[in-house]
Length: 310
Image (cartoon, rainbow, N blue to C red; front, side, top):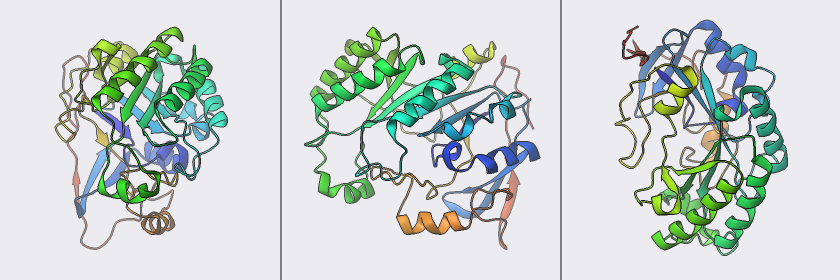
């Protein structure tokens, strides 16, 4: 099993106590986002977890707790973008995040510290030249601290369009993607790392950019030293290269308040859910309720093609 922590919210930044409590107790309960009372019980056993993939915009809270992960294989994906607080309303100062990224890489190695530069948003202010400039500045500071950067171009969901209406977000053409992709790839190469594109149909190989697997069986094999045989995740978009994982997060719980976020519906919903969070609960939000139907999730190890079922 590959554990995703989490596409739905920033657990490393905001819910570290809860996360480590779940590892210590050996299980977690996760509500089905499409069926509220359908709850999965997921065993968190190091023997069955092939790797934990931690997604965050700020790893600072994890730096003094990495010893609690010593029984697990894991890697981090840290998002650092050039947007200010008008777009990323509650994200920490970028200088601080870069410093935390550097410290994290020093502790766990650059292979396990992936930089995400996404989403790429084109507006009157954040145009192609803006991204070239700021990516270059960040790339120079992250040289020697990572081997890979994952980029993506913004997808305009209805709530994203609503939240960012005043910014006049421009559609990103294939020409823009190719031009900017080539510039970012060239800068990354000069600083010693590669660029891959997340969930993009366009072929950017001419720009030196391959399709990304954010949940990456190849990287996990490299980290673990074992062959990992995992299927493509059928629950993700066709253009997504990720292999199967189990996500333990919950939507409408991230406090960063990014206007482009697809995982939060509204500030009021997020604030309500935050009030329901209990670090000692088996669930990220709330607890078991009348009417809940709890079922053990069948999980399997993908190591060495010898599937172990729990």
